[in-house]
Image 1 (cartoon, rainbow, N blue to C red):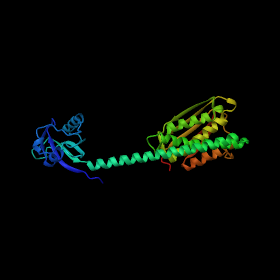
Image 2: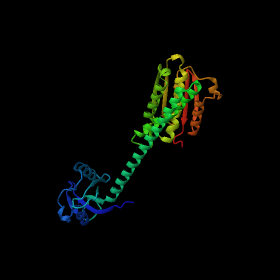
Image 3: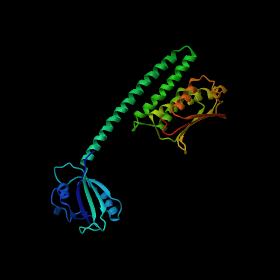
Image 4: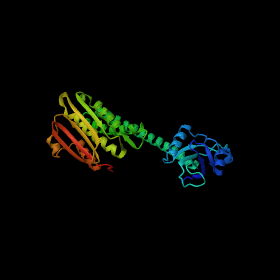
Length: 325
């Protein structure tokens, strides 16, 4: 633990003028004897006069101690001081009842350690940002290779599977791109990420999605990377499936993606469309669709549940527990 040292006290009247000072404080903070500062307003290098006036008013009214950072007036020192003001109780003695006590603490060691920690965090963030940047670039190379293979594939089924795999790779790449551009390297900005993801999918399925009006509402500010990746894959699978199958022959319709925190805890994720509906084999679990199997597996991985509602279109309601990992 970094060391701090209480140097002593300066005693002030209600106007902030020094009426008494302990010798050690006078020597360390002012480079002289107490007589040098008695009768003068409290002044230290770096001590903001506006903040000092506010702290004095708080102390006069008996509020909790206000602490201010300052530097010694004594030459040849780089110490950092903390000055904490409070109203002395009537039982204080020393003929100083009712005075304002300014306790001076040497926090140089604490300040130095905080600065070292700040630099260490900056180095870590820079390293993590570089990692996210390289992962994103590598994933984009893989995506480009998949796209190239898809464009030359003769078999429609193979081409479709390659495109779907490309979507999944890009879904993860967008997360790393979002983290690379973020101040917080540990948390994914979910509104920004989902907006980018849906934008990518609209572009990837431009022909099928041109008549689809998509609404995105994200009420969860951020998620950790381990949760954001499966959530992104779930959204990607359901939105891509909607663009591919829900609106055949250029049929117009609406798509809604809503993510929010539930009042009882946990997160709800809704992907709903006004399309032609989902086939019975999907509802009865007989579908061999990799995308839907992947959705169910990812939800189980997160400890959540899936509900599929049909009627006027299709709605997937996914509930995930809070702190699911």
